[in-house]
Image (tube, rainbow, N blue to C red; front, top):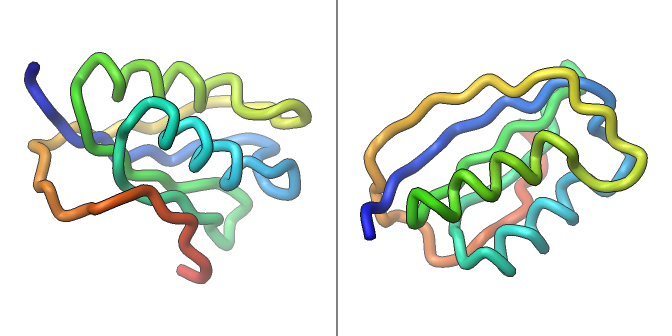
Length: 94
């Protein structure tokens, strides 16, 4: 199965609704690696690496997010899988 990497900027009401923790939980269930963090402008940034089908599932989950989130759009940048991650982390700061 082909692997890839996707870098997301998730726009909308996505802070203060457990978006990062829920994203990490979802990533672990899907078996993808990477990280997620809040941005100072109120958006959330995430990087996922793994099988392409699982990356698509992660993006679909991010479009809805956890209860209370209101996602208005997602910017996506695709790249090759680097294999640099060993798990999925919540990052703090920017």
